[in-house]
Every structure is written in structure tokens, then in C-alpha cells.
Image 1: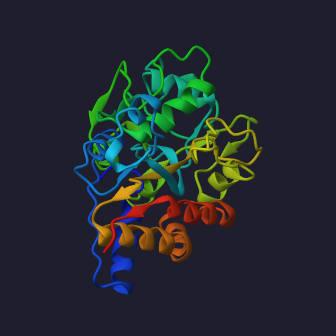
Image 2: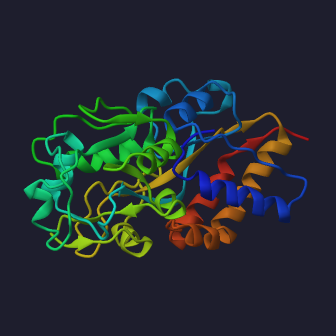
Length: 313
């Protein structure tokens, strides 16, 4: 159980893996990163999933009979978009001043000059902006707010899986925010790209750190991860990439595994699945709009699986 952002990919992977290995079925509850970490630490699931790497305070709660600590491995890259519902306005461009103002609630109307100046020719309506955000503990929120904290001068809302938004409507999961945007003309909010793509949402082009307006595409998001190497906890952080053509809101998402699996069959099945996903799961990742891990990082992930111990059969 865990992160909603990679859920479309995980469901695809689990179905494909089952075709190759009919005796193994993997179920996954898309409940958000916060709930995923909680259930993992409470041992009510065989693995957890989070877009926001585990914090030290959570690592301290790791059950000692399941190993020295959690095994945290990245599975794919993903990126967060500003999705919006505005009839007659396609290809919306948002400068940093504009999208920071929308997110912190200081820009309240669609025809605000800060939005209009980069969208000449667009018929921006005199319509209130409805901000849609995650109400649950969310790795998507963590990725999004970590970026805003770097990109927005004077950002006061903070960063993390849960923040107190000054305005707008909350919804649970990427699924809930997607629905909230679809249902409210004038709405804008943040979702993982695959949800925007799958539901045909309009997605804004954003100004990056270099000042380039970049469309939200997997190719542009992949540029943000070029040359990045994970630290000793397999964490890669690029809250505000500097590459001229890079999309600005990009991160990795992670699986959480135990070091000890008393059920040998489950432990071996998880190791087999992750090994398969790192090699044969790349096609599905690309098709759905995720960013496959570079080969060198995928190889390190598979090597990390050797630290998983399973009970003698």
C-alpha cells in the first residue's frame, strides 16, 4: 500500500508480471505515501510505497525483528503538473511568479495580469481560481512543495507530505484531485503527469529555473534526472533542476521492503518481481508517461535485493 502517483504503473506491472508468473498475484492499495509508510511500519502490508523518502523519525520506528532498517529502492521517475479546467484556453503558460501566486492564494482570478502577460491572445476569463490540493498525507504534495519552497521567493506554507493550504478544495489521492479539477470550471491543482494524461486534463507549461517555458513531457522531465546519482539511502533530490530544457517538478518514487521475510515465498516473489520490473517493466513505464530508471541505477536496485533475507523453506 502507499503512493497514488505510481499506482497506474504499479497496477500495469502487477498484471503483466502475473501473466509471466501466474502463481504470483500482487495487490496494491493506492492510499497515499503517508498511509503507505504507516502501514509498512505497522507490518500490515508486505511492502510500502512512497514518493517522499522515509524520514529519520520514521526509520526509528522500524520493527527490529524485520531487519536493521527499511530497504528503500526507487522504481521510476515521475513528475508533477499543474492541471487546469478552463474552456477555450489551451497551452497555458505560467511564469514562476504566476504559479507561485496561484499556489499560495495571492493570485485569485484567471485574468490576473501576472497570468495574462505570458498568454497574449488567450481569452482568460474573469473567473475565480479554484485551487485543488491533496487532503491526505501525500508524497506528491511533498515533491510539489519541495519545489515551491525553492522556486518561490517568500514561500511561507512550508514543504512536506501535508501542508496547510490557505485556500482551495482538498481531495484524497491523485484520483481525487483529478476529479476535483474535472468537476469545477476554473479549477487548477497539482497531480502526477500520468493522471493528467490518462484523463485528458489540460496541463500548464511552466517556467523553469533557467527561465525557459517547458511543456510537461516525459522527455523534458527526464532531463532533470540526467547525471543524478542516488545517495546511500537511494534518494535523488532535484527540487529545482538547472538544466535549460528540464521540466522543473521531478522526483523518484520508492518501494519500502523489509530485510527479513518470515514467509519465504513472499520474500522470493518480491525479489523476483522487482528484478523483473527493473528490466522488463521499462516499456510500461514509458507508455504511461513515467521515467524509467537509468540502467546503472536499475542495476544497483537489483543488487540491493541481495540484502533481503528469507526464512528457510
